[in-house]
Every structure is written in structure tokens, then in C-alpha cells.
Length: 140
Image (cartoon, rainbow, N blue to C red; front, side, top):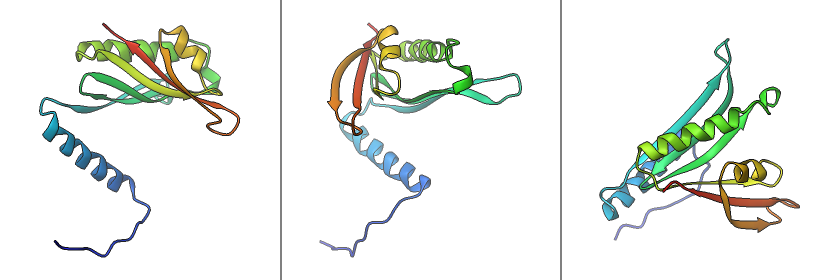
């Protein structure tokens, strides 16, 4: 067996994609009908500027929402809810059975609960004096 000299370095965005793709390749060997598709939804103003967005992915039979952001000056206008509704519509169209996401206590746990998500785990003191919530919403 060849033993390489190794060192750990901070990776680039391109290297992060490489690592993600290698794990997807490995997973596909174990679940051949698996899939991984990135999802990005944006809300733009009349100037074409992004004022809200959602990033996530579809993995096997679920959608995972990584980020949902609304510009502070546009909050309270229903943009976050519209993004969630569109994500849910797309997830259902892709035969997903649930959506999962995580958020912090200083972000929007109440917002997700109002939109039908249920907390399945809460980590205390992460970060510091806050809580880290994990949510799920079953689609069927």
C-alpha cells in the first residue's frame, strides 16, 4: 500500500465542489437510483437585484434547505413564505417525501413552524447563548 505524505490546507470553492462530488459518487455506488441536484430560487426587484433567495438540494427522496435569506428592507412582505411554497412545490414535483432545514433561535424558528415545519431536534448553547433548531416537513 502506498502511503502518501499529507498535510491539511484550507480548500477553495472549487475544491469544496470536488469533495462534495466525490461523496456523491461514493453514495451512488450504495444507492444507485440516488440523486443530488442543487436548488437555487431567487426573488429579484424591478432592477434585477436579488432581494431574497433560497439555496438547497434534492437528495434521494428529500429536499434540504441550506439557506433562506430575505433582505432586511423587504422582510414582512411574504417573500420567505413564497420561497418556501415554491421549494415545496418543486420538492413534491420531484417526488420528495419531506423537506429538512436548520435555523438558529435568532433567525426564524417561529416562521418555519408557522409554515408547517416541526422541530425534530434542538441543540442548546449553539452558538453560545442561542439554540440550533432542526426542522422537518413531510409532504405526503
